Image (cartoon, rainbow, N blue to C red):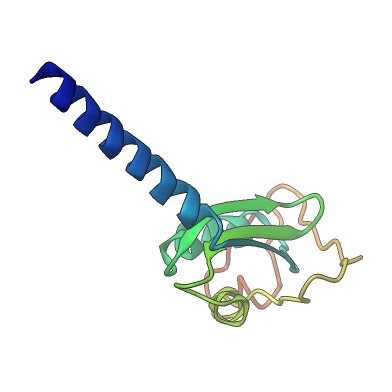
Length: 122
């Protein structure tokens, strides 16, 4: 009886491991170059994009002006994620490098379109 139980547990563990491995093959990582003007832009992306379908990982880098998204291809597309970022009033330039660096000084009001409605400061 113990042997049967042990074999059954091993089968369950192996099938679960294979299932996790199969899901990782459907994942895709995309790097969006975006005009992230201030910390408010970063916060909006970090608050909203993880709730898009299929998103597994998100990294926002203000220095390189990039948004790195790992998502399941069977749940979402690059185009849909780009639209979701653009809905936040953040300009996306695909995977091209952006030379724009519009930073605000401490206490200075951000005048960019992404912050117009909110009147955010850095």
